[in-house]
Length: 361
Length: 264
Image 1 (tube, rainbow over the protein chains, first blue to last red):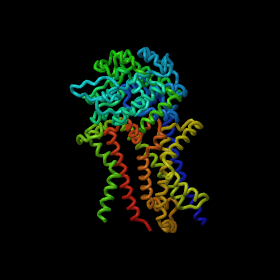
Image 2 (cartoon, rainbow over the protein chains, first blue to last red):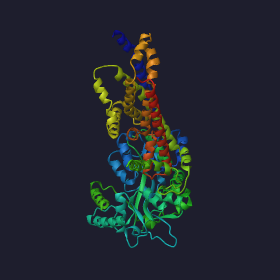
Image 3 (cartoon, chains in turn yellow, blue):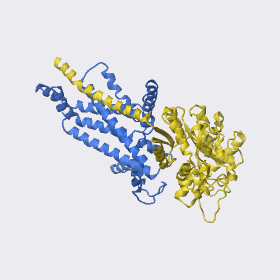
Image 4 (tube, chains in turn brown, yellow):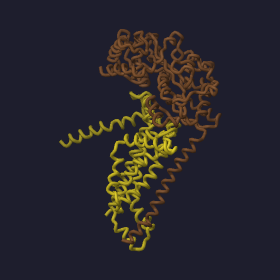
């Protein structure tokens, strides 16, 4: 028995040594990470395929820093991530316009110090006084686009640029997909009927609900923008509601497809660069935003992402075929009919109700 | 009757496992937009190797799996030995608590870890979400699996071997290195392989505890799915399926070997 006890004591040196060893490995990892975070490093949280790697490398070289990019695919997961501790890890996020007032209200964004952003003057005037953030207090427009109809060209048939090709059974131009986002699809139907996209009028919404339900029954169902685009590309659908940047990439792959913006009006969306309130590298983040606002850099980005740049000065450097493409930079008469989605707060419940009714019918 | 049973069960398993086969099949599809088959190509695998994001995610996955498996194997083995050898107060409680992380849902474990690191961060200033928190999270769920495997292996060993060594004058170090460790090696290796496979496949714990620059392959796949599944993602998934299955096969091989020799 005594012998056995001795044995345990001697043996316990090995496990103690091993435990200390494990602990030191973990400590090393942790301290290495802390050191890495203290370096000149910019943590960017952005949609995928939304920044030109060459631009990232150029900024890293010019400012002797490193840019770490993490990707998200929908704003819900981005929001969840920054609300659960990500707010003090990431520097720059790219929220869509309707999310900006929500983030500002929750004190998630740092006000931009305009002294550090001399290139702000390059923005188009419209984006300097956008309704969701007038005066660029918190955000700078990054890219913008609109919802439209993506379709396959049929010889000898001209598709009229109207929402009627989807919502009017008499003018329906083949099988189609609706967008699986309540305010996008209901908003399009509102515009088709000549109402405002942010309407909370119960009567108008009832009217539109019936139109969408009827359209749903004739459609191939609901899909996200990329899903709808892919259905047109692989010929399962004739048309689909799609965001213009997705459509641009589709047209590049298949010249037999095209994109139209309906004449009744459509939804404009803007993705914005914003600095988080607890960003660890606020100065570097502002340098980066200013760098992206440089006309040549903005043009290079627009050519890569194939979306519309809000940078007026960049237009001189854009590819002519993009600049003259009415589905990327629409003419003034269509542009003037584009509407921003507004955050309706508690009043958005009526949209949730209608959307549920549409989905179950 | 028996033939009918065979046919029915084959059909059933075919249906259940068809999704896995389809993923692998479509990773060779020439059509970049999914849905229909247009021809055979290995193009997506070539593209994969040149994609820096995927390579980075792959590197992160290996680091995560490597370090967490290494540490959890050491800790789990010690725990397994301790539980098998010694009697101490609270042993019953510890033994059954070993099954907690195995039994509770991943999502609860993940959220608990995330909340805990949040509190730890507020109190200490370190523990920002990232590679280290992810490694810690993985170690947490790996330890019980290693401990259970090692313990099972130990209970199959003859204690007389160690007593004989003691009788012949071996000291504690010698007993550990010459007797215990070689006998335990198959169990430890099996535990480590199991732990590594679990780490490789884990999405939920990683997703909740990851931070800037620490994207793993499962997280990468998840964030790509929203954009429409490209054959490139199918290719990554296929490679992960192949890797997981080979590890499991290795595990069964090892298990057979460890059962064959040394047992009572």
